[in-house]
Image 1 (tube, rainbow, N blue to C red):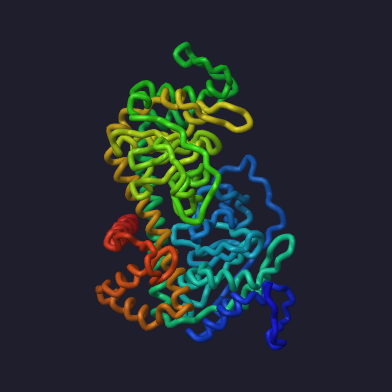
Image 2: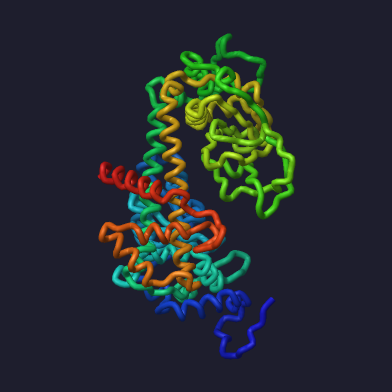
Length: 512
């Protein structure tokens, strides 16, 4: 509850959120830290294209359709995934040319959840169509670094100011005039570049992470593997006596599943002979604000372990040893998102898992890496779905999981698998941390914990080849903010971050 006491504060808005004290205090702080402008004054060209219906793409080939980007493909860090976009008929690019995306455009969610903000990266798909739930804007490059603006809008202050102008009806909506009136601090161009570069570095790391994913896939892609995975689905399959088991459900004998299983058995090792132990996790539903991360299916559904968003349980709870994970473990989803398997990174050692996950423990970390690479591949997912049972909620049993075969050629590349997985995980984490860095720097400036002068000096030093000041700033960052005493640093090893950035840059240069 809050009250507006001064009549002069009343604007043409009568909704309560517009007068949220947190937003008003934020504006007051911004006014003392720099020149205030509006988002609209920085936009040189902007559109929200509303499509009149979505025509069917049934029967159309990929080259006859266009990728269609909606807020669903933008994550909370502003990263955009183009893998699972919906599709539109190709004539939409001629019918709605203003709906086509361009590199560097800011995308702001204006309908629905109204919280997501992203920026179109360099490696976006050709003829990308933007959903009408997103407003796309090209900024005036002489006044604004678009990546800095992204960081501002993603910061807690930017989100507060954006939410203040949102109309809270049945479906949340922010009109163009309201969007354009969001206050923005127009910082010195050098300051904007320093903050914006952190977002650009995150983009570069994400691009490298995608390349690492492709390299992991190349470990698997033999001709026999591809033939098995591309076996056509048929209504009738022809299992042999060797394919039969005690299962009678038709799915178990799907033609593609049989082909993949035969491929693995031809030259593979029984999973049961590779493990040290197997166990399900345990159930606990009493969560606390600070404690031990408790990993559920949600935290692994993306294909990697997302500990940062996991619920936490009290450290005083009696945790069975079978539920504690370490770097030689592979987690397989037992119920829910069947087909997901991930290797635990050493940074997540000590977390605990729910009973919906199966914990495979190995003697060697390299073997765990190879097994997870295969189980999380196309072929691995086919086999995991093959052995699942139950109609309402599919499940996987331990015995049938251990009866799967892991191809020997994958096990022979276990060291390569481990190196690729470690680089992928470190790169993904660093990318997310750099986005958080950019947001935290904006917040620290508004709160007066940092000055523009400090960031200008750091940027100028970087351009002269000296990263001392940059390291000093990065070392004070944590997930709790800037210069928070006792907080865990956002970057445990800043030299490692620089090394990852150098590798990502080298990978991008070689591709160019």
